[in-house]
Each structure stands twice: as structure tokens, then as C-alpha cells.
Length: 137
Image (cartoon, rainbow, N blue to C red; front, side, top):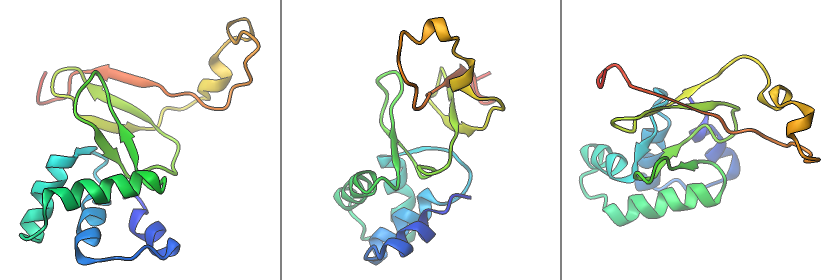
């Protein structure tokens, strides 16, 4: 489970019922990165009066705050990752676009040979693993 709700409370973020529902859905802990429409569907099940615009605005604000990452792969719909403060990589289904957090061992920064750095001082690495999820296999 991510610690999104705890981080937002620590920031003093005004927790309206709509914002709380969006944050709770993102904080569910299964590490599946939902689209805005998927968040809206789940939010409407809990809070029928929540609008799509409110969900989009809340997601945008969470991204602006740096509390949620916006993840986009292969021109697909943006997905939202609440694990903004925990180092991880992504595993993406090449068919349906499902994204999962993974935590490979090793240091990807150390894995890049010196002669391939071209004088760069490395600060981070983003690695995306691709394959087919169990549903698409």
C-alpha cells in the first residue's frame, strides 16, 4: 500500500469528500496504475455525485504537488501512480497497457558503463519492462 493519504494529511491538503475518495482509490495498494476514467468509475461507485471534471482536476493537482506520478506509455491514456516517493520501475503489458510497479534488485545507474555515459552525471534511471500480463497471455 502506498502512503499517499498520510503524505497528503502531512501537507495539510484540504481533504474534501471528493478529494478523499480519489486519494483513497489511488492509495488502494494493488499497484495498478489507473486512468482518470477508471478512477472516476470507482469514485462514482462510492460517491455518485462526483463529476469527471472533479476527478481530472484532483489528479492534476496531485501531480502538480508531486504526490502522484503521471505515467504514459506508447501514446495510451495517462495513468496515475501514487508511489511518487518510492523508487521503483514499471512493468507494462504490451497488449492492454496495464502497468504494475516492480522493484528489481541492483542499481541501474551503476549498470551503465562509463564509456556509455558521455560525460553525463547520472541522477536517475527509468526502466520499463514490457511483456504480456496473465489476462493477455
